[in-house]
Length: 637
Image (tube, rainbow, N blue to C red; front, side, top):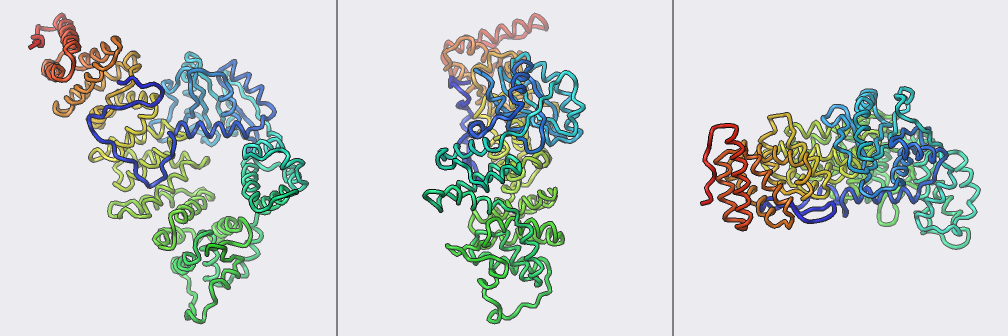
């Protein structure tokens, strides 16, 4: 209980110090909700209204639910987000739901809906099972949606749109005008119209080819990056030329280069350079023979003094040493094309490349950004071929019990972070993290999972992140990083506190009851309005009852005492009375519990609250006496 306003609340954690967040991933400067809000603000600034969006808005406003369809690349998900944020609202918040198969959070619980919420349900990548489950739950979910005057925008999988029940209305979002999209993106980067109007002919030709919306956004980023190199009249045309050159698909150039590189060490240098693009030249030099060894090449190396110099060998693969002694290809984006071409055309190199990755992470010549980049590149290569198992295997290998806390543990966190943020395969990663969280992960893996849930998954999938953090905290051998992270996480948002309280109170698995009871004692101070809602009051009663049943008095007594101290400090009679009723109702007229609670209260709270507590206890016991045999009341002395 507290008197703080907003979504952030102080917590009474029974004098347990919450440890600082670990540093496997960069700690966000803002809470996940604020990060998501800033992303929405940026999206609205860059969004060009497509044909059909006004009709979709009318359906959403009138029916509180709309399904959006459109061609791939038309920006359906972005349109859904903007529609929801354009709705007038006073109380509710915007949030995204993530129904998943193979986990306990597969359905759409109606209690996720708050008053006047605006909710996105993106099922564009859902398989048949996930789609069927969502459809089954949507009727009950929509009933609660209407009751709470909330709104829902759904992006269905295109292959199942024809099977949509008649009660739901489908609206088509067409591709927005590419010129308007470009203009909005340029303005969002503080480029005035006078700088880029009229658009150069080469840029107009590119727009007429109907590139996907994501490619347009990336093109603007390249234009903005190029503006620092050229200034003056006509500079924008040169920025565009540089950006369009970088945007060019260089696969053919790689395909033409590869046959000229007949020796294994040449191809190893090409792949190592592509993977470590932008790293120091010494790192590429040491990484190349490691890769050659992993692929078991039979090339006979010449004595060192008879070999070509590194710069000469780099020139052979169209690369060079750039300022700062870093290795780069001569053509922009050649590194990405080389990685993808070699991955696709040399499949026998894929497994050795994963082993090589673990070894080069130990190179002293690599700094942390270099390591993060090469892990991201390898992750993207695996995902480009629809392969996640090698990534999961690396995570498990790098976080095994006998592995020290090294760069490999941090690299495992980066793999999972990249995975959960990836639109197409994010569900696969969330399911695997769920499976790990309900087992007994190693200490290193637990720390990685905690970091990924708290700092990455939480931004767009807050409820799934909560579920996994809860399981990790339940399964810790002793309170540690998972419990600390769970406390930090729910502290940010009353909605998450409510979800966790419901999970603690309604768990059907007796295996977790003792752990949940102990966990509740570290989270037993909630916002005041929780005490005045019927559902949350009952959950609090159930949790305290579980505590009194399963936890030793020396453990629960400080929590009960702190609960009463907080109630004594609240200048709100209904809240104070509710706090007393919850605690007494949970004790269920058990004399030893009530006696200990009252004895501690006399030493910790005001005489007025002690008297009110005694009165509440006596009323409860009198009610109990009317139903069962008489028992002694708690004596005021």
